[in-house]
Amino acid sequence: MRMLHTMLRVTKLDASLAFYTEVLGMKLLRRHDFPEGRFTLAFVGYGDEDSHTVLELTHNWDTDSYELGTAYGHIALGVADVYKACDEIKARGGRVVREAGPMKGGTRVIAFVEDPDGYKVELVEDRH
Image (cartoon, rainbow, N blue to C red; front, side, top):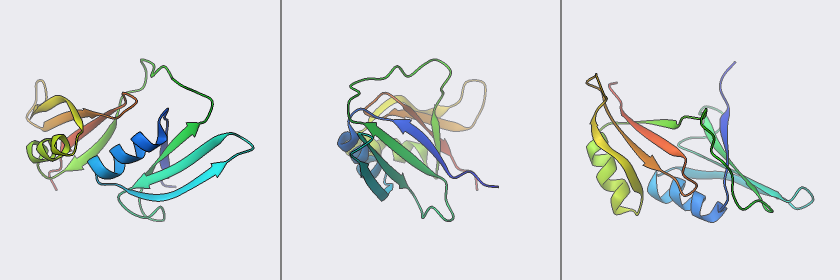
């Protein structure tokens, strides 16, 4: 078994695609409209779906907003340099909501950015 994808429901598909591709550097892997069901699925990621876990963005055409809930946490991305990644994300118009720095009570460097729907994306310094 392997993890295939994580799904987020988004209200503004074009804004979300711009965030995940232009700001975070993912690639749009596939997109398909389902007119009879009135929704669109778009899959983004850093590699092909055969060998990478990807993110499914679901846009329900008739839904203007969602409640994010209190149980959902965040998506995490490993980056070589969190400080540099934050600078690059800000330069591309992304919103950093927790600046780069050590975790509370730890030494690992993290930061958080927010997508257009308010979902948090954690940047974690990759030690590999």
